[in-house]
Image (cartoon, rainbow, N blue to C red; front, side, top):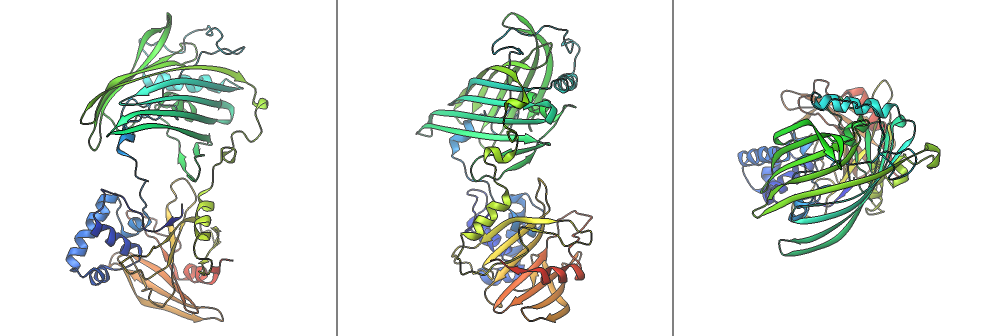
Length: 492
């Protein structure tokens, strides 16, 4: 997503470390940072080490491409996500277990439970057996399962929610829409709000339809289950003392397979102990209901409770619009479009040199696409560039491939992080640009940079080298960087 201004992560980096990160983004070396901030090079090295450690990255280039998550109010850590197939029985980012329940009937909503042999023996079945059996059951269905649910979770803050899901096993697709009403008092603040969420899962990818999010995630599978079975039963998060067992039990007087998930989660200043009992229908292994219990210690101990009940009906795929499971149908906006809109919001007089939204260099090289932009806002820290564009390899991870930095004056040094560039390999003067190609090295790894001058505009094209990567960067050759320099174009 386009980043305008200087992103901050309150409480993560100190003000000085944020200044150092700004200058890392500007491509400054340690001596240059020391000169600009009037501190010693050794002090800069210490700040850089702290920045890398706190951001959880290994290189300066990864730090330059890093942007923080939007800060959430402290009370939001009391909330349990209700929009996925997991009612989290712990703190946010702890147990990812959504328990959803359904009374199966092919004829009408609320019809009788189906009869048939149990898919697993709860007295001997393992968790893997349950996930695999549910996957096999879903593979036999041809229609679309429409699930609607009303329930609540409470851990100091109460969430009452309505969820609708459409699950199409034959297309391995799912669409989810939910509305959550949040109420309570936390940190002296009265909370009364509503949130709506939507997502589509198709081909193993989850597309988030929240306005402006552009989020795309790979769906986690677990315990030998398919994508949809893993979504239905949930995949455990990083908990301590996590246990997940299968038991026999009863739900509303009928036999049930019970999946019991319990564990402890520790956050920055909270401790959650929880247990979720997920009741499954023996003949389908589709959940009937879930019950959550536990405690949430946030300096003050809150009881953790939750309950969900679901209804459903099977419908024909033809009853839904043809594009029902397409990301665009829920308003998903590609990250590329977000970045372009960010560029368009800049000064219209600012010339922008780029490689387009997608770039194919040919010769067997991977296609790359526009992944981010950063335009510094006015700051006491001087920037040697006015715009930075990042191109990434396509896919969920969006691994950085190239960075293009643009300066309005000839002040952009041919450096990239800790890679000084002093060995000029070639110079070429054309009618509209001058191209210089440099070899850059940190003493261990080499890469090739291009410096392109368009009148009084200087553009640096730098391949990004990711730590611990044996493959290097396929764009980091003299021939490829020369071609990139030729293909740079002024955005109209």
